[in-house]
Image 1 (tube, one colour):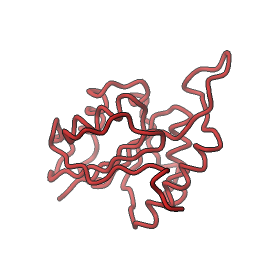
Image 2: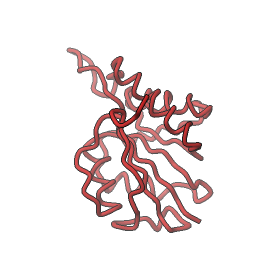
Image 3: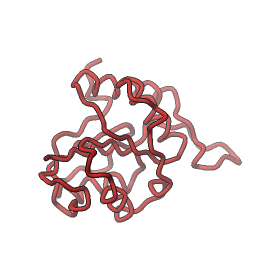
Image 4: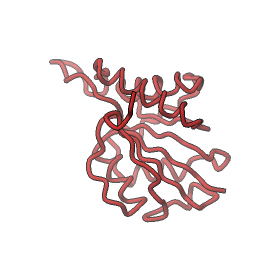
Length: 166
């Protein structure tokens, strides 16, 4: 069975305000629009996620929820994993390795630079810094998430809002 992992960088957030914690930064109007558009893009392609895993940061939660709403995915089932916020590539890999094997299609919403580094690490592809609301789809010819490691994935696509035709 093939595993599909969609790695997403959260959408565009508002600048940090004086006294505001980084984790509490919300999406700005562009981020709200782009998250919805990315969800519509997934819906148009018939993509459904077995699980959506997100950083608990407000901007990542909003990105996850807006995508989920377009897919009729129950937003209460989005798994918020505190390890994703400020994670290293190694930590993100551990999060992936611990996914349940019954899940075959997963969306993980996180932050740069780790999300971009992870995409490159898993695929050995040159991706660079993922744009906000950018999503890399990676396929693995593996049955178990804990078998995923450096170079085991194949990059299927890299999409971001500016590429969408609507």
